[in-house]
Length: 239
Image: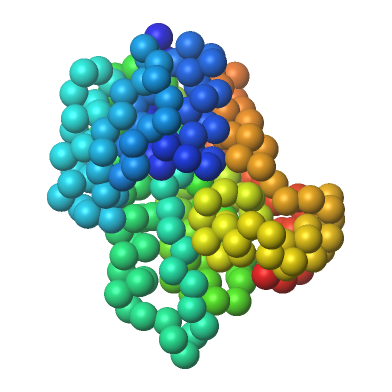
């Protein structure tokens, strides 16, 4: 049975990824601060704050303790929006731990098992904001860092049969999205009209892209960034 670790698997994009993997008969370990809403014989949930490096190390070892994982999806994220004049170093440090340090810790934890199997799939969930978006200094910087990690690890791990790719969503209707634009806010309709496909994305839109990159048949795709953004990566985006 295929085994996957998914961060942020209790809601939004992560939950959609977990559902798709379970539907495909994979065993899934979900790492999230929040409890999972799912009950499934092949799902195990570990409560962890991935911005806490020590806790992340412990959770990573727990996740691989019962067997190697050949799939890793690092999806957990936070935004902390602020204009440059108000940006805080504490926010940059927190998002660096959550987006980048957690990715490194988890990748190192799964690497021995993937190398032993001579097979692995790593997908890092970045963001369209990595291309630039007002109020996203800390978020855009750290999500862009995930793209750099994917390209670097792809070069290192390709000979081991391990692919590493990034998926860059946006804008997707999730709880995190609605923390910035509450449901019913008239700016949501205006935003949708500014997107080339004239709608906001759904978690399943991103999950299907992630699942594609996790497939054994996707072994000739590595070091790439797939934008799942309704075309906003080739045009302007206003929030």
